[in-house]
Amino acid sequence: MKYKAVLLPVAMTKKRTALIEETLNELASDGWELVSMQAQQSLGGTDGNLAVFKRNHGDTD
Image 1 (tube, helix red, strand yellow):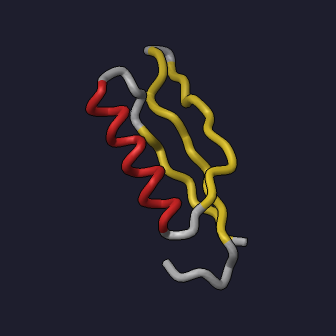
Image 2 (cartoon, one colour):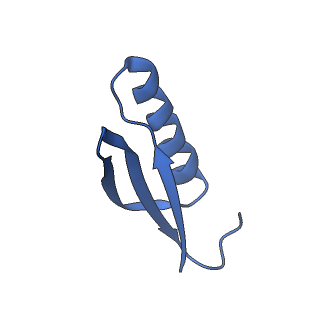
C-alpha cells in the first residue's frame, strides 16, 4: 500500500466546500481511497482537515 496525507481547508463557504469535493474526487479518480479525516486544531481554532488516503502500491501516480 501507498499512503498520502493532504491538508484540506475548513469548509466554511460554498467555494471551500467545492474545493474539498474537487480534491477528493480528483484523488479518487487517481485510485486513492480516503481512509480517515481529522480536524487539525490550534489555539486559534481549526486550521484544516488532515485527510489520509491509500491505494495499491502498483497503481501509477
